[in-house]
Image 1: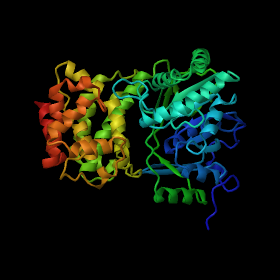
Image 2: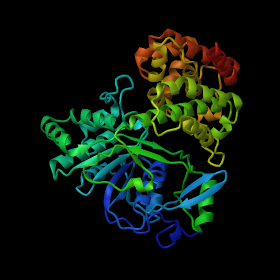
Image 3: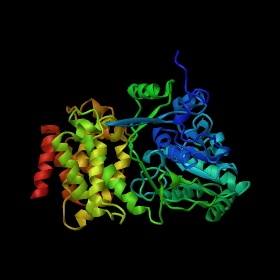
Image 4: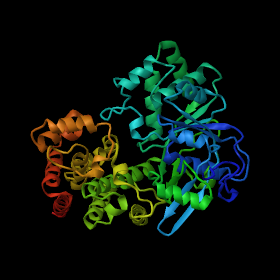
Length: 497
């Protein structure tokens, strides 16, 4: 039996912060790999060598696996930073507890409402915010939100946990707090504030008014941009951590060397010195958000869908195919880049080269099925605005159309078409609905038209541009009949013409 990672067995040389936190100052919602390889690392690094009040209470949404593993290891875990040329292991000893919201929602509300909590951070993916893709407003008709409004002691959603936790603060001590979304949403702080306010606006009158008045003066929701590729951990990654640590870690996280965090500096109750760890504070996060959401995330999605359809298990395998690399370069440079205001501090040619270098990191093994999951929520953040920008100028963005076509072929393949095991492994909240629609629609053009006209995935404004909808259908038909390489060649020819 291997020794387990713990405070008594961890090699001190691997600890990012030797002194344990003196208090819980941060509640983090979403105890997944990304948080543990990103915000937790920044917090531990910022406090290296000194006692600090910025311990993190990690809250998993549903799965108890990570929370249980960390609890059995004195809340420790390792981060394996890996590239083809290097492998390093560190242990961010910064967590003070681990909860599972589905098991104890009252404890989550109580933690957010506690006077000692000064920051709430969030990484629950785009799918965790329960907003309408068409309006951007809170989806008050969703079963989960309806449940939360009717059951204030046992909410299911992240928005419900935050809203009731903030209401508790307003009802009791009134201490200020800052809520920081670290998910890939444009203007994520403003979006989170809007959704929380809309939830609170649906509460009974007295609590609604008291909480909204308190929010105006005592809560902030700064925008932020986060960036680090963090794939799912494998047995090989866990073995690498064990070799370096000399002990077994059941909660290993693996990540690329690159990491970035850009935030608005609007914290009412203090914050860690995250700039010591490389975070950037600015008054205008939006250009960084837009650049990341479109150039990195949007292109990443196309690579994932094409790669899966080509039978490629990983992003490096996918981008190594010349036709996929060419399509990725085209969507980035021709369709996304003209819609982005690049920050003055960024050399866009260097940034683009670095992106392809990061996607080519064969040591990570980032899976196409992981990157391609939740596309019904992700693509609504990435495709419509750039597409409408080009369409308004009289241009047809062929590779944005290709992105949508490849996505639909992966998650809702027409009858008789097998998209392959990696596409079938993608998880998507709309997969069942889209699959039924695909199975019951007599042609690909009618299926694609119904998707756009429904307004569920993309704003109906995009459906009014028939050439774009027709182009998505034509490219999807090419994928089904001749494969993704032929569809990419057709998009490339159309772009050059």
